[in-house]
Image 1 (spheres, rainbow, N blue to C red):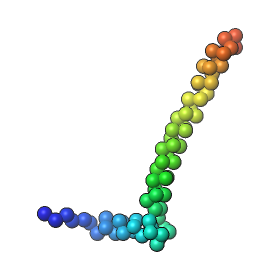
Image 2 (cartoon, one colour):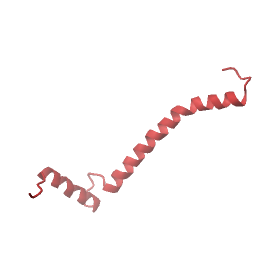
Image 3 (cartoon, rainbow, N blue to C red):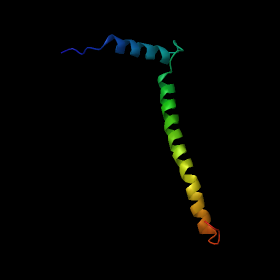
Image 4 (cartoon, rainbow, N blue to C red):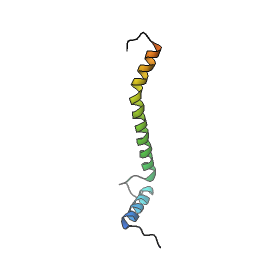
Length: 70
């Protein structure tokens, strides 16, 4: 049984190939899409780290100076 693809899917692949070849500037290249995905993932990780930092700082400060009020 032959594979059949919807025309919209094929058109999307063609447009992406054109973007990757530098023939289109209305969409991101595959490399740019991967970079954006990696940056979004890194952003989530950094936000998590920033949420933890105040609590971690308070814990370490309390251990360094046990006379400091909590």
